[in-house]
Length: 111
Image (cartoon, rainbow, N blue to C red; front, top):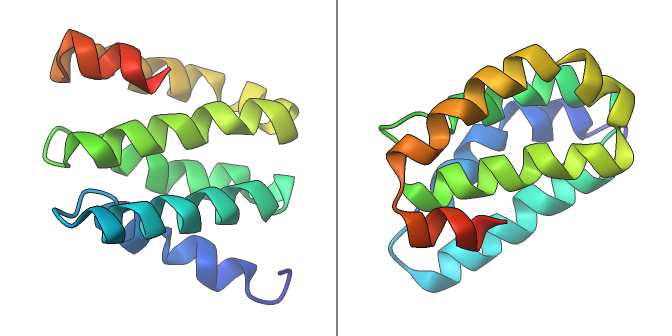
């Protein structure tokens, strides 16, 4: 993956948008793709990928896209805790606005 990593990470926003698709099959495949990219990427790419994940938590995005972005941010705590710690101020600002945008049931189903 090291050779393809810059291209996959740069196109992560398209896969995140597909996670909000109306077709369940497209959503499922997009979630698999995003989770595999985030799971297998280098820890040094976290700061770059966080930009795309933060953009995916905008109010204009579908709630499925926002939920997936938050799950991926949380997954960095397992395999890139130092890099996530460096970005913690930005992460806190992003996730404090998220519960306002979704219903109670959807918010608790994310975690």
